[in-house]
Each structure stands twice: as structure tokens, then as C-alpha cells.
View 1 (cartoon, helix red, strand yellow):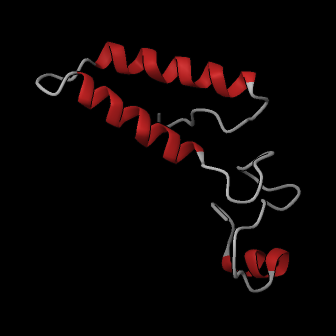
View 2 (cartoon, rainbow, N blue to C red):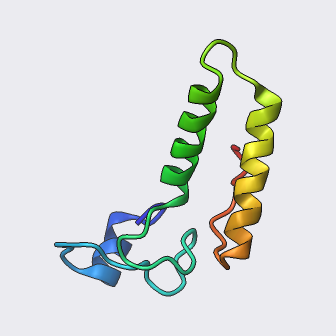
Length: 87
């Protein structure tokens, strides 16, 4: 439902009582199935693994490399939930 106003969510989905797939033409989400882990969750887990790998000092170059590898894997899976401008 990310980036959709409340009225558009209600129009496309009605009352939501469980997992639903994004509506056709959603401005951000393309192709995930209902209940699929999102890019935000995947990036959070990726960051957690980076912090666990080196809890003393954060390696920003390794983090950037991790993000780029993650984006390449997303492309290989055929999804378009890629890194946004704030990344």
C-alpha cells in the first residue's frame, strides 16, 4: 500500500483482512505475491548481517557492495523493487 493515499487503497482493495498482492499499476510495487517479503525487509536483514559481521566498525564500502549485490539478485529474480534515490 506504500505511497497510495487512503482513498486509493480503499478503492483498490476494500477492507483488508489478510495478505493481498499489490494492485495492477501500483506506483512502487511490481510483481510481488501476497505476503511476500518486501525490499525494505530484505535490506533490513542485509544490514543486520553487515552489522553482525563487523560489530566494532561499520564498513561503508562493504555495505555499498552488499546493496549492489542485493540489487543484482533482485533483478535476476525479475522484480523491480530496486534501490530508491534515498539509498
